[in-house]
Length: 288
Image (tube, rainbow, N blue to C red):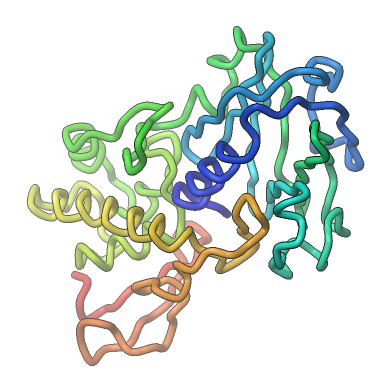
Protein backbone atom coordinates (compact mmCIF):
# COMPACT_ATOMS: atom_id res chain seq x y z
CA UNK A 1 0.00 0.00 0.00
CA UNK A 2 1.35 3.47 -0.82
CA UNK A 3 2.40 5.16 2.43
CA UNK A 4 3.04 8.76 3.39
CA UNK A 5 6.11 9.35 1.13
CA UNK A 6 4.41 7.80 -1.89
CA UNK A 7 1.16 9.73 -1.47
CA UNK A 8 3.06 12.94 -0.71
CA UNK A 9 5.13 12.49 -3.87
CA UNK A 10 1.97 11.82 -5.84
CA UNK A 11 0.28 14.89 -4.33
CA UNK A 12 3.17 17.15 -5.30
CA UNK A 13 3.24 15.78 -8.84
CA UNK A 14 -0.50 16.08 -9.34
CA UNK A 15 -0.47 19.57 -7.87
CA UNK A 16 2.08 20.59 -10.48
CA UNK A 17 0.05 19.26 -13.40
CA UNK A 18 -3.62 19.27 -12.36
CA UNK A 19 -4.18 22.69 -10.81
CA UNK A 20 -5.94 24.98 -13.27
CA UNK A 21 -7.48 22.19 -15.34
CA UNK A 22 -11.24 21.88 -15.76
CA UNK A 23 -12.95 18.48 -15.54
CA UNK A 24 -14.87 18.02 -18.79
CA UNK A 25 -16.03 14.41 -18.46
CA UNK A 26 -15.76 11.36 -16.20
CA UNK A 27 -15.86 7.79 -17.50
CA UNK A 28 -16.55 5.22 -14.78
CA UNK A 29 -15.68 1.68 -15.88
CA UNK A 30 -15.91 0.02 -12.45
CA UNK A 31 -18.85 1.60 -10.56
CA UNK A 32 -17.89 0.20 -7.12
CA UNK A 33 -14.78 2.42 -7.08
CA UNK A 34 -16.59 5.74 -7.63
CA UNK A 35 -18.98 7.21 -5.04
CA UNK A 36 -21.20 10.24 -5.56
CA UNK A 37 -22.62 12.01 -8.60
CA UNK A 38 -20.12 12.83 -11.32
CA UNK A 39 -22.36 15.71 -12.38
CA UNK A 40 -21.22 17.53 -9.24
CA UNK A 41 -17.65 17.77 -10.54
CA UNK A 42 -18.06 18.07 -14.32
CA UNK A 43 -17.28 21.64 -15.30
CA UNK A 44 -15.41 22.35 -12.06
CA UNK A 45 -11.83 23.60 -12.04
CA UNK A 46 -9.10 21.96 -9.92
CA UNK A 47 -7.66 24.55 -7.54
CA UNK A 48 -5.48 22.52 -5.14
CA UNK A 49 -4.44 19.20 -3.64
CA UNK A 50 -4.01 18.13 -0.04
CA UNK A 51 -2.93 14.93 1.68
CA UNK A 52 -4.06 13.57 5.03
CA UNK A 53 -2.27 10.36 5.99
CA UNK A 54 -2.48 8.05 3.00
CA UNK A 55 -5.45 9.87 1.49
CA UNK A 56 -5.70 12.62 -1.14
CA UNK A 57 -8.11 15.54 -1.43
CA UNK A 58 -8.53 17.18 -4.83
CA UNK A 59 -10.00 20.63 -4.27
CA UNK A 60 -12.45 22.14 -6.78
CA UNK A 61 -13.74 25.67 -7.34
CA UNK A 62 -17.32 24.70 -6.45
CA UNK A 63 -18.93 23.17 -3.37
CA UNK A 64 -17.26 19.77 -3.78
CA UNK A 65 -13.95 17.94 -3.47
CA UNK A 66 -12.71 14.58 -4.71
CA UNK A 67 -11.32 12.32 -1.99
CA UNK A 68 -9.07 9.42 -2.96
CA UNK A 69 -7.70 6.40 -1.14
CA UNK A 70 -5.38 4.24 -3.25
CA UNK A 71 -5.57 1.25 -0.87
CA UNK A 72 -3.20 -1.54 -2.02
CA UNK A 73 -2.70 -0.96 -5.74
CA UNK A 74 -4.39 2.30 -6.76
CA UNK A 75 -2.66 4.76 -9.08
CA UNK A 76 -3.40 8.26 -10.39
CA UNK A 77 -1.56 9.07 -13.60
CA UNK A 78 -1.71 12.37 -15.48
CA UNK A 79 -1.09 12.69 -19.21
CA UNK A 80 -1.19 15.57 -21.67
CA UNK A 81 0.44 16.32 -25.02
CA UNK A 82 3.81 17.01 -23.36
CA UNK A 83 3.92 14.11 -20.89
CA UNK A 84 2.12 11.48 -22.99
CA UNK A 85 5.35 10.36 -24.65
CA UNK A 86 7.14 9.52 -21.39
CA UNK A 87 7.92 5.87 -20.74
CA UNK A 88 5.41 4.33 -18.33
CA UNK A 89 6.19 1.75 -15.68
CA UNK A 90 4.85 -1.72 -16.50
CA UNK A 91 3.00 -1.45 -13.18
CA UNK A 92 0.31 0.68 -14.87
CA UNK A 93 -0.83 -2.39 -16.80
CA UNK A 94 0.49 -1.65 -20.27
CA UNK A 95 2.67 0.60 -22.40
CA UNK A 96 -0.13 3.14 -22.96
CA UNK A 97 -3.10 4.50 -21.06
CA UNK A 98 -5.89 3.67 -20.61
CA UNK A 99 -4.75 0.12 -19.78
CA UNK A 100 -6.43 -3.04 -18.54
CA UNK A 101 -6.11 -1.63 -14.99
CA UNK A 102 -7.76 1.72 -15.81
CA UNK A 103 -11.17 1.99 -14.16
CA UNK A 104 -11.91 5.74 -14.10
CA UNK A 105 -10.92 8.34 -16.70
CA UNK A 106 -11.15 12.07 -16.05
CA UNK A 107 -11.11 14.05 -19.29
CA UNK A 108 -9.62 17.48 -18.65
CA UNK A 109 -9.43 20.58 -20.79
CA UNK A 110 -6.57 21.22 -23.21
CA UNK A 111 -6.29 17.54 -24.18
CA UNK A 112 -5.25 16.26 -20.76
CA UNK A 113 -6.40 13.17 -18.86
CA UNK A 114 -6.23 11.78 -15.34
CA UNK A 115 -6.37 7.98 -15.14
CA UNK A 116 -7.27 5.97 -12.05
CA UNK A 117 -5.74 2.48 -12.28
CA UNK A 118 -6.15 -0.28 -9.72
CA UNK A 119 -5.02 -3.88 -10.15
CA UNK A 120 -6.95 -5.21 -7.14
CA UNK A 121 -9.80 -2.66 -7.25
CA UNK A 122 -9.77 -1.96 -3.50
CA UNK A 123 -9.28 1.82 -3.74
CA UNK A 124 -11.97 4.48 -4.02
CA UNK A 125 -12.76 7.96 -5.25
CA UNK A 126 -15.59 9.87 -3.56
CA UNK A 127 -17.33 13.10 -4.46
CA UNK A 128 -17.84 14.88 -1.14
CA UNK A 129 -19.28 18.28 -0.35
CA UNK A 130 -16.80 20.63 1.29
CA UNK A 131 -19.16 20.92 4.25
CA UNK A 132 -19.12 17.14 4.76
CA UNK A 133 -15.37 16.62 4.28
CA UNK A 134 -14.56 16.83 8.02
CA UNK A 135 -17.12 14.08 8.62
CA UNK A 136 -15.56 11.52 6.24
CA UNK A 137 -14.47 8.70 8.60
CA UNK A 138 -11.16 8.02 6.84
CA UNK A 139 -9.98 11.61 7.37
CA UNK A 140 -11.82 12.27 10.63
CA UNK A 141 -10.27 9.24 12.35
CA UNK A 142 -6.71 9.74 11.04
CA UNK A 143 -4.14 10.11 13.79
CA UNK A 144 -1.48 12.85 13.87
CA UNK A 145 1.19 12.39 11.21
CA UNK A 146 4.85 13.32 10.79
CA UNK A 147 5.30 16.66 9.06
CA UNK A 148 7.90 15.95 6.38
CA UNK A 149 6.72 18.28 3.62
CA UNK A 150 6.21 22.00 3.34
CA UNK A 151 2.58 21.86 4.38
CA UNK A 152 0.37 19.69 6.55
CA UNK A 153 -3.38 19.28 6.07
CA UNK A 154 -3.89 16.89 8.97
CA UNK A 155 -2.83 16.89 12.61
CA UNK A 156 0.90 17.10 13.36
CA UNK A 157 2.70 14.28 15.15
CA UNK A 158 4.54 15.95 18.01
CA UNK A 159 7.09 14.18 20.17
CA UNK A 160 4.95 14.73 23.26
CA UNK A 161 2.01 12.94 21.63
CA UNK A 162 4.23 10.16 20.23
CA UNK A 163 5.72 9.54 23.67
CA UNK A 164 2.28 9.43 25.27
CA UNK A 165 1.06 6.87 22.73
CA UNK A 166 4.07 4.62 23.29
CA UNK A 167 3.91 4.80 27.08
CA UNK A 168 0.31 3.56 27.00
CA UNK A 169 0.72 0.88 24.32
CA UNK A 170 0.48 -2.75 25.39
CA UNK A 171 0.94 -3.95 21.79
CA UNK A 172 4.13 -4.64 19.81
CA UNK A 173 5.65 -1.31 18.84
CA UNK A 174 5.49 -2.21 15.13
CA UNK A 175 1.69 -2.51 15.33
CA UNK A 176 1.42 0.78 17.20
CA UNK A 177 3.31 2.56 14.42
CA UNK A 178 1.00 1.32 11.66
CA UNK A 179 -2.26 1.94 13.53
CA UNK A 180 -3.64 4.82 11.47
CA UNK A 181 -5.97 5.99 14.22
CA UNK A 182 -2.96 6.49 16.49
CA UNK A 183 -0.38 7.70 13.99
CA UNK A 184 -1.23 8.61 10.42
CA UNK A 185 0.70 7.81 7.27
CA UNK A 186 3.18 5.18 8.48
CA UNK A 187 2.81 1.73 6.97
CA UNK A 188 4.77 -1.49 6.81
CA UNK A 189 7.82 -0.26 4.91
CA UNK A 190 8.70 2.70 7.09
CA UNK A 191 7.73 1.07 10.38
CA UNK A 192 10.24 -1.70 9.60
CA UNK A 193 13.01 0.64 8.53
CA UNK A 194 12.35 3.14 11.32
CA UNK A 195 12.59 0.44 13.97
CA UNK A 196 15.84 -0.79 12.45
CA UNK A 197 17.27 2.73 12.38
CA UNK A 198 16.37 3.09 16.08
CA UNK A 199 17.69 -0.44 16.85
CA UNK A 200 14.41 -1.50 18.49
CA UNK A 201 12.92 -5.00 18.23
CA UNK A 202 9.51 -4.70 16.51
CA UNK A 203 8.04 -7.27 18.92
CA UNK A 204 8.61 -5.19 22.04
CA UNK A 205 5.54 -3.63 23.59
CA UNK A 206 5.43 0.12 23.24
CA UNK A 207 5.20 0.69 26.96
CA UNK A 208 8.55 -1.07 27.53
CA UNK A 209 10.50 1.56 25.58
CA UNK A 210 12.63 3.98 27.54
CA UNK A 211 12.36 7.73 26.99
CA UNK A 212 15.60 7.72 25.00
CA UNK A 213 14.40 4.81 22.84
CA UNK A 214 11.14 6.62 22.14
CA UNK A 215 13.06 9.71 21.04
CA UNK A 216 15.36 7.59 18.84
CA UNK A 217 12.34 5.96 17.20
CA UNK A 218 10.59 9.30 16.68
CA UNK A 219 13.70 10.69 14.96
CA UNK A 220 14.19 7.48 12.96
CA UNK A 221 10.67 7.62 11.55
CA UNK A 222 11.26 11.14 10.27
CA UNK A 223 14.63 10.06 8.85
CA UNK A 224 13.28 7.17 6.75
CA UNK A 225 10.24 9.12 5.56
CA UNK A 226 12.42 11.99 4.36
CA UNK A 227 14.85 9.59 2.69
CA UNK A 228 11.98 7.98 0.82
CA UNK A 229 10.76 11.36 -0.36
CA UNK A 230 14.25 12.04 -1.73
CA UNK A 231 14.03 8.80 -3.72
CA UNK A 232 10.50 9.45 -4.98
CA UNK A 233 8.86 6.84 -2.76
CA UNK A 234 8.97 3.06 -2.95
CA UNK A 235 7.72 1.03 -5.92
CA UNK A 236 8.25 -2.28 -4.16
CA UNK A 237 4.69 -3.12 -5.25
CA UNK A 238 2.38 -1.10 -7.53
CA UNK A 239 3.12 2.51 -6.67
CA UNK A 240 3.89 4.95 -9.50
CA UNK A 241 4.13 8.74 -9.41
CA UNK A 242 1.86 11.26 -11.14
CA UNK A 243 3.47 10.54 -14.53
CA UNK A 244 3.34 6.76 -14.21
CA UNK A 245 6.99 6.28 -13.27
CA UNK A 246 8.50 4.34 -10.38
CA UNK A 247 10.11 5.54 -7.18
CA UNK A 248 13.48 4.24 -6.03
CA UNK A 249 13.38 3.84 -2.23
CA UNK A 250 13.00 0.06 -2.53
CA UNK A 251 16.62 -0.05 -3.68
CA UNK A 252 17.75 1.76 -0.52
CA UNK A 253 15.53 0.15 2.13
CA UNK A 254 17.31 -0.64 5.39
CA UNK A 255 15.60 -3.95 6.17
CA UNK A 256 12.24 -4.04 4.39
CA UNK A 257 12.16 -6.79 1.74
CA UNK A 258 15.72 -7.91 2.58
CA UNK A 259 15.05 -11.27 4.26
CA UNK A 260 18.20 -13.41 4.39
CA UNK A 261 20.52 -10.57 3.40
CA UNK A 262 23.41 -9.37 5.53
CA UNK A 263 22.60 -6.62 8.00
CA UNK A 264 23.96 -3.18 7.10
CA UNK A 265 25.34 -2.74 10.63
CA UNK A 266 26.58 -6.17 11.75
CA UNK A 267 27.44 -9.67 10.46
CA UNK A 268 23.89 -10.87 11.23
CA UNK A 269 21.17 -11.61 8.68
CA UNK A 270 17.78 -9.97 8.25
CA UNK A 271 14.89 -12.14 9.39
CA UNK A 272 11.22 -12.02 8.46
CA UNK A 273 8.40 -12.80 10.86
CA UNK A 274 4.67 -12.05 10.98
CA UNK A 275 3.21 -9.45 13.32
CA UNK A 276 -0.48 -8.71 13.06
CA UNK A 277 -0.51 -10.61 9.78
CA UNK A 278 2.08 -8.31 8.21
CA UNK A 279 5.57 -9.25 7.09
CA UNK A 280 8.06 -7.79 9.56
CA UNK A 281 11.78 -7.48 8.80
CA UNK A 282 14.46 -6.94 11.44
CA UNK A 283 17.97 -7.82 12.54
CA UNK A 284 17.87 -9.92 15.74
CA UNK A 285 21.46 -8.92 16.50
CA UNK A 286 21.06 -5.14 16.25
CA UNK A 287 17.47 -4.64 17.35
CA UNK A 288 16.87 -5.23 21.04
